[in-house]
Length: 225
Length: 335
Ligand SMILES: Nc1ncnc2c1ncn2[C@@H]1O[C@H](COP(=O)(O)OP(=O)(O)OP(=O)(O)O)[C@@H](O)[C@H]1O
Ligand SMILES: [Mg+2]
Image (cartoon, rainbow over all chains, first blue to last red):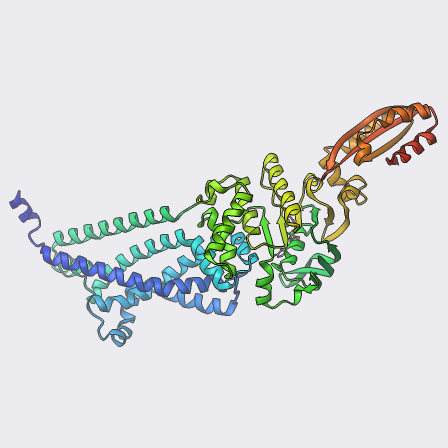
């Protein structure tokens, strides 16, 4: 048995796999956090500035929407490369776990912002109107009615964003970003160590599954419909 | 008192102003239940939403207790809205909040109530709308009638002086409609608050309203005490509504009348005269013979009324008419 394992997975360095998994976790976690911090307010503004919405602002909407669209339409691999000088300026290096986070946020935040906008639009207009009729100001409408009502949709959006960030984080291995993707490229691809490749992919699949399950549970918990 | 002074409203649609309410002047008295009926698209919602400025008027003045709300700043407006409750056809409860939190919501928004004050007010309101045991449920766990009662409790939370109801019973079955209407009528009596109520069912008007306005294509075409508008409708739209509510088929009615002989009269009794054994004595006095073509007895709010369509033959018709009028019966000669 042990001999068989040795044969099949001769190249696998479990310590390195462990470190890489942790790195991926950190990259996804940190970039998700910043994507939410930046994307949530942008999503709320996109919603409020939209047509026939509370703060209808066609010009502001067009500008914001354009920036979001540009960031979302650039393939992530290009974004990774284009962001290098900016990342160096921001944190001093474009390598490793830290170096991968700024491009991940640049890809994740606009993605999440759109999902927030969409889930806010799904809130029944009647609820906004009823809240207005109670004498609420705009801040109270946002925090008292809109965000709580859209919470299940926003949580689903966080799940989708997190999963997207897992695959983006794997891609950042190309520019030396660290994590499971880096491992897969350096050993699995460049040195033809198929066993390393299989294990990293399997770990990524498990990671995505866990995220999806956790997200679905939370959505269910917060849905009162 | 709510005074409309040449109020008008048009919506901008594709760069053009489409009128939804033509210049309208009217007064809604403090403490009355004022009904607004009309077909879909007549402008009922537009009119009621002008009262709490969910829609700004595009002309004229709206005076509420002598204050022109069309001039309010946004801070004034928010304070004013706390004094105007509103309930909706689709309830518009927050699905993410429990029943108790929904009712507490307007008080929390107002920011002038302490936590214990809010808690005791919510308890009081829950009891008032008979939902105490549902306090911690979410709206999705309630029936339509229960949701609307939550809506009413929420609308009353900040002790408003005006309650606006936009088709508050249109999504409910007849029995539930009854109980919600009864609740509204009780609230009107107990708290003396003014209720403005939109509906497209004359039956709702008949049960709870004191006065009614009939709207058609952005205009108020008839307005007056419910008994007057209901028993003696003038405008074709009003007649449609009244006939519809009495489930009278107008063609059939015409046919019946054609077959009848002699004079045809429509008698309207109101109040006590509804219950008096009048017809027999009138027939004896005047020697007329009568047959009843149609008839009904019902209530307008708390007042009983009856309407009879009779055909009369022989005897002295004038004597009969005078005797009826002397007994406070409204007589209308149909033919
Ligand atoms: N936001 C809006 N923008 C443009 N037109 C509108 C708007 N709201 C209402 N209208 C128009 O104004 C007219 C009156 O609408 P309103 O909603 O007041 O009718 P209603 O009497 O309440 O009808 P219903 O019984 O169907 O609720 C309609 O022709 C409608 O199309
Ligand atoms: Mg309407």
